[in-house]
Amino acid sequence: MSNSFELCVGPIHPALKEPIQLDFEVEGERVKNVSFKLGQVHRAIEWAGMRRNPIQILYLAERICGICNVCHPMAFSMALEKIAEIEVPKRAEYIRVINAELERIHSHILWAGVAAHELGFDSVMHYTWRVREKVLDIIEMLNGNRITKGVFMIGGVRRDVKKEHIPKIRQALQYYRDCYAKLEKIFLKDASIKARTRDIGVLSKKEALKLCAVGPTARASGVKKDIRVDFAYAAYPWLDIKPVTPEIAGLKARGDTFDRILVRLLEVKQSIDLIEQCLNDLPAGPILAEPVLQKLLVQLKGVEGESIALQEAPRGELIHYLKMAAQDSPYAWKVRAPTYANLPPLIPMLSGCEIADIPIVAASIDPCISCTNRVVQIDNDDSILSMDKLRELSVQKTNKILREVKK
Amino acid sequence: MKPAGVVNSFKKEFENNIEIHTSEHGKGKKKTVRVWITVKNKDFKKAVRHLFKLQEFPHFSVSSGTDLGKEIEIINHFVLNYGERLKAIPVSIKVKLPKRKPEMETITDLFPSAIISEQEKMEMLGITIKGIPRNRVFTDESMPSNAFPWRKDSKGVEKIARNLHEEKRGNKK
Image (cartoon, rainbow over all chains, first blue to last red; front, side, top):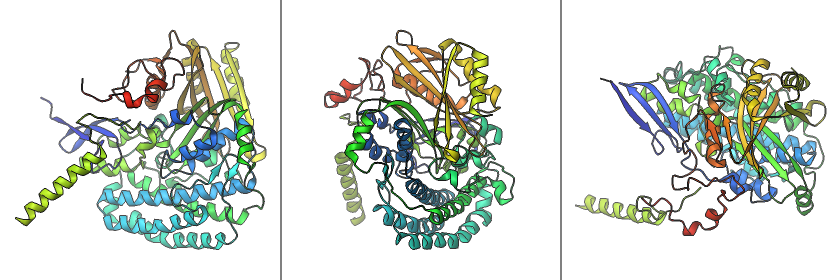
């Protein structure tokens, strides 16, 4: 007789905030096998993109992911710029990097908060998210918005970094340098965090290579993949940058949850340095190859060809494939967000771990599940509830509780 | 290995049974080279295996797919030489499948992580990939089994998308 049980986590589960279903076979507290199902929130974004013009797609691409809303429009722009042979002005390339690295800082710190929450340290979660506010303020100052920024354009950027912005950005970078020691102490020195993450959720270097892991997940296992370094774009070819692995901190890569925390924290430091380099070297000049959008659209309507753009998003390699056929809309557009690549490595990470470790191990790849799903379904079926019906039911329940409390 | 080395290695192995070209962009440190290879369906797996002769662990990024009218084109995107400053080479291997029999082999024995990409191509384009199960991953069960979102012919979903208000999707059968 088998001693194993089936345990299902997700697609809606308090331990995972995004819609993925993880099916576990457990023996006691130990996970024996794991498989996953995704696709619960497919939004048909590529399909919709193939019915829009390239400028409209920029704003659609930005909405693939609330966190990586710099990377997607940038990757789409880069693919199209290659096909249309548009040369991006040098100043715009530096501004693209500044925006991308500000996004990495806010994404990694956001993740640190989620990791703390999954470990049960909600005070740390609140601290990290308070620290994150500073970078969001800078993003708002530069682009007029905290999250969806609308800063990208094919052939450059829409908003310049002004002279008066630079001291404020530098001040924010110093703020993060000052906070870094505290974050390091909390995440890397705390005995409880170490006990919950060291040698937990291990992804060996060989598995990371074989399963084509990307981003900090791969680098924590000692795989030096980083598109900013290997296949540099924007201003990265001119910047001093190395892939961040645990070796940088003098440690041997073990590929565990602790190493994935370490790599992301070191990458915050790296992003501060990269922004500083960009501010020092920021060249003067235009920020758009073609500032008149009507002219740009006419130019883009005539282009034919295909290209791929690779990008290092906060979660790893992001790829956009684009095919243009002298039409208003792309003939084909394929988006592959990094979490797509980091889901298969979850299987060896979770196999053999304890049930209590599932939330932190799953969170350690910094999953962005909605990125991997690209149909909102409106349904009259009684088993699927509309927003109004849900509201009605919640009001009924609240009234019922109130009546019971008054008794 | 430089991009020319990748091109020569494929040419030597496949002689006239391959179309190969590179696309170059930028100058100096900004120069990037992408390698594009088109192979016949029967040589597709051999071409993917050839990547392992160039690097122990080639990186599989994703596969994209396009309805070209009479054929469906599947492109598998790989990266070689990662981990070296400014030396990575994206290699895209294309195969064209006739619509009357759009079948190809799986590469999940070489790249286990390709399973999501391959299932997506089956679901979105209505092709068959031999060796993996045909599961619904991204589309809803109520989507007709002969409708494929990325097809540009009568098997596409334009009509369904236009008349969503007429669809009673999700009703229990």
